[in-house]
Amino acid sequence: MSAQDNDSGTRAEGAASSTSALKWVVIAILALVAIYGWQQKTSAEAQVSALQGEVASLQKAVDDAADVRKSSQDEIDRLKSAVSDAQRQADESKADVSTAMAKVSELDNKAGTLTKENDDLKAKLQGAAEEMKAKLAAAEDATNKVKAELEAANKAKADAESAASALRGEIDSLKGQIATLQKDLEAAKAAAQSATPAAPATPTP
Image (tube, rainbow, N blue to C red; front, side):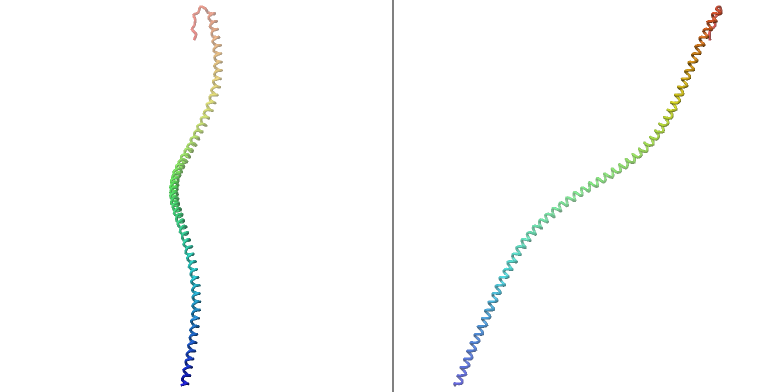
């Protein structure tokens, strides 16, 4: 009996010792788990805090992006308005260019017509100039002929005046001679009458 009791006591002590050791092991494991869990909690809290910071940063980035998007949209609207104004001005410019081109075409046509009329006038003027030259040449020839005829007439007049002067001298001389002859004839008649008074008068021829 003693031996059995001793074995039972030993076993009981061994079991108690094993239970105590197991308890301490469990406690140690739980402590480790608690420490690991605390560390994990602390790490998770840090990660959550970091994530919250990232979320806040992302939210700020989103807000900034929204502001940028609004600014961009305003700029886009402004650019669209500017493009619309530019397009309107371009359309007006096109209309002005079209009107100007029509004016240019009209002026070109008028210029062509005026050029043709000018060419016609130049041709007529040249023809008139040639005709005038011919008429002037003919008039010059006629003038030269008239001058020659006038010179000849003047010479003939001078010759005629000289001849007339000579004839007048001859006529005057003849008149003097006739007057002298008439005096001589009258004297002869008077002498004849005084010489023969009874004789009938003879008619003078």
